[in-house]
Image (spheres, rainbow, N blue to C red):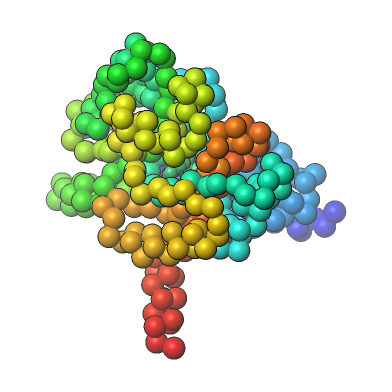
Length: 327
Ligand code: NAD
């Protein structure tokens, strides 16, 4: 073993864990996401060359961050996982091919969705009534934030379904609400939030529910736990059903069969993202068929049936486009 390589690895791991605490637990990141992503990819590269160095405290083995709040803890019946990231079209294609190989099929339908830059949320309904709302936390245990969930206007408090159901999605702060909130904080001499994602996380985890209400949080619900219990066969069908039940869903999804369609969708939303009223940081690829999703299963950290293509940071992207136009 090369000692200095190992020491550098430990330093990188410690630095990433500090960034994770700032981001997930304190809602106060000190580096941009693309910088975190770059260092995390570096960590993964070292770990794949030295699997013997990987211990339980590595960011590659953990979802989210430690819970450090006054909210009661809530144990998820089914863990809330993270997602694998890719950073180029070539890598997206390679990931899609790996999935096809895994299920031994040449054609696999993907449902493409916008990756909303917010925080994951779980909602449980019993006898048609909202009974529990929680955050992801470390994936196994989240925070019970039920009183605050009742303050989000677009979360239905009742649904036309008697069976118990858990749904999950993203809680976010729209661009206008974010600007309004930060302006108000500046006026009041308070520190501003770094980005809408952190503002949403801070707003959802307020001990005073009236503060949560004043922040105008919104949701997009995209996930039904055990969808087959409700007769659902595909992710695109689940999104339609969620909307019929009264949830806020994002209807910009698209079912695709070939890579040209993927490319078109990514190009389209890379352009449109600046005009959307909420922040997105990429495109999520989900195997559409729930039977295939079950076949693929999960690793300790991520489902094998979905991954995200992360957009380049806006500055870099604008720069690239400028170069394209001027040559
Ligand atoms: P992630 O945010 O990359 O992806 C998983 C999450 O995507 C899910 O939990 C869900 O909340 C969300 N999501 C949004 N739209 C979705 C959709 N349509 N379908 C399914 N899920 C959707 O993973 P993560 O583990 O939550 O966070 C890792 C990311 O957080 C990093 O890539 C990095 O950008 C950021 N981060 C930044 C810092 C920092 O210091 N800046 C630190 C830690 C993490």
